[in-house]
Amino acid sequence: RAEEKTAYHPPSRDWDMDPDLREGLDDAWDSIQRHDPKSARFTLRYMQSRYPENADIWYLFALATDNPKEKMLYLENALAAQPYHEYAWRDKGILEGVISAEKPAAPDLVPGEAVPAKSETEVCPLCGGALAFDAAAAALLCAHCGYQPGMSLAGAGSAAQKGYEKLENALLQRKFGFTREWKIGSRVLVCQNCAAQLTLGSEILSTECPFCGSAHILTQDKVGSFEQPDALLPFTQDRNSAARAVHALLGDEAQQIERGELTGVYLPYWAFAGFVTLRLPTVASQAAAAVRGGVYSYSDVLVAGIKQPSQAVLFQLMPYDFRALKPYETRYLAHWPAEVYSVDVVQASITARAFLKYRARQEATGSRPPDEITLARTDSNAYNMPDHPFWQSVNLEADQIHYRLLLLPVWMVTLIYRGGARRPAVVNGQTGEVVISSSFDQPDRFIAAPNRPGPEPLPPIPLPAPRRDVIRPLPGSRLSPIRPIQPPKR
Image (cartoon, rainbow, N blue to C red; front, side, top):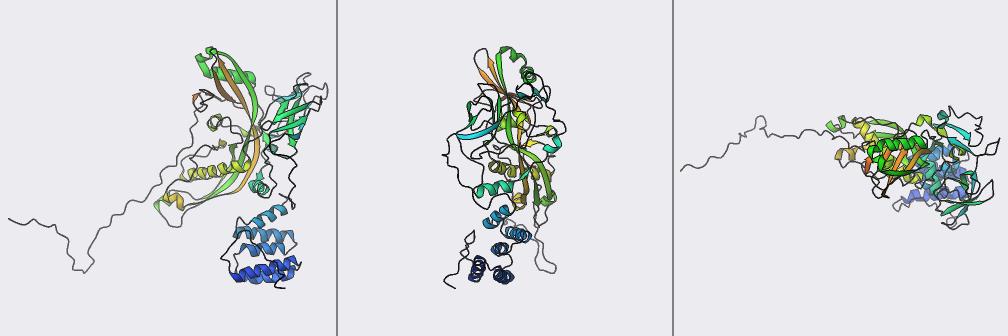
């Protein structure tokens, strides 16, 4: 059977692999292909006695059993030996139900063209009017008859604290072709009230029909290009209160403004939670004594899912009070526009990982207590590892990272002056914090803002005092102290 034997190809090509190990893997793989798991396990047990840390042996063990618990144990051992073992990573995702065993067929569409989509619209069961969330009343109301749905929205905040999903699942979906990312130009849906055809831009999540005025909230499209939000914070600041907050902050300059344009919008944010393990070097030093190693946990670290407004503006709007979070329902977006994220969770996770390690360094050195709700800025270089020998010897790992997608309320304001000049402003739709920029060309220059401090540098690590070596004669030696040379006498 030597000529007919099938060869096993590891996910990472190791040209220096021991020939005996390669032959053993090929023998076990060939037995598995011939549906002879007993012979495969016999070969693998022998190979494991010689190569106990080899990930491919553990992976083939998983293929040689039908027991799901045993299979999961073998796959986890393979990933412990080789964290990026592609085959074990994929099979573990299939076993957990994260991805399908069969790769989905690519949609018969050209990237960039309009795709069909579906939406939901909420109508009053009494008069057929539009149901919308009223920020002043903090409830869903009919705009025509005042009907309020019987469902209770109070106390839903505790349920909204859940909904986290493993970041590993999103990475699996992207790696093996199950990603929800798709570059599209627009989406087309049909109004359920008047049958008019509506076209939504790729960044729009909700809209109103221009013919009948009904609200439409996007639920899915043909290519599955986006994720549904997990929770949202309802508006507590209505249009009038947002306008008053901006007017109060302008002071005397408010007399120069001719009018203002306000639009309430929900912006998407990725919220991450995870653990950071900080291991100090084994060599004891004064620097290591000043840093506390251990495991640090964090939750609700926000990364913006959109590129506009700028990171500096969004940072000044923080924080939000997540105790008022509600589980996502489409009726909250009735007559409130919302954006679809343009930064997906895989991109956002890069910033989240860097920020989690930065915050762990801060807490380990005791420089400042961590904030409960904060924004990790994608434009900041402060989250990089310090260029310091001590930090280069410290082992920092971010583990068990989970994520969820949130919608947070913001009022987008355009101030129009009498001379025709325009100036942007942003209002936190929950707390009423106001950020006024100098111009649209320079949005990061503020004329009014809470002035929240940006990322702070780490405190200096105390280094041991410089060593001063003094040469002394050994006991019993004939060395005499060095005397200064005297100048010659004239």
